[in-house]
Image (cartoon, one colour):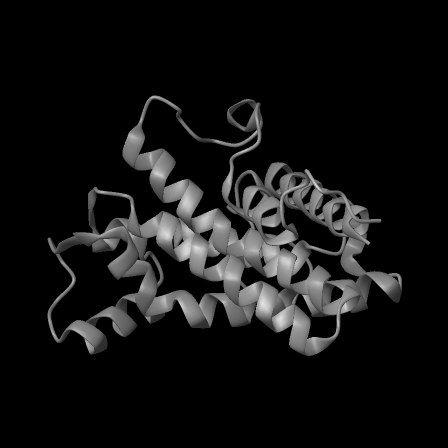
Length: 207
């Protein structure tokens, strides 16, 4: 049904993807008094949230329409990250050796002690992360439908990879078991399931 006063779906999904839900600080290890920490967390998790929005949109819409909506949301997320006027140590943002090597290849400079804007750093790994997250979601959903995932839910692979990016801990992307040392796994898994449900509800309400 058409609602004249309702915001476009892309605007409402952007809010799902970008905004940090109230009370998140009570569940996940983030400090709301640390502007740089909040900016890094919000920018990093928005990419994982965007992958969830992609998964839902491509199951509910024709591929051409879904692609158009995803591009609109993605461009606005990138613009939001670009508005973060803070410098970060590249090594604080990119924890995995593979991503640090990608930065070195792109910039032609060593990583130690180098500062840059958040959007510049994430731009180097953006496409790869988004692709990996989307693959993780599809694999997790498939495993969950077949009765797998070891009780950790359909977003187990997404949660593992996101935490790997946040901590630098090496994971086995083929295993549905969280690695030892992957702290706050359950909390993040619950968070992502909540975001997925909000996105699904938002899309369904649009139909």
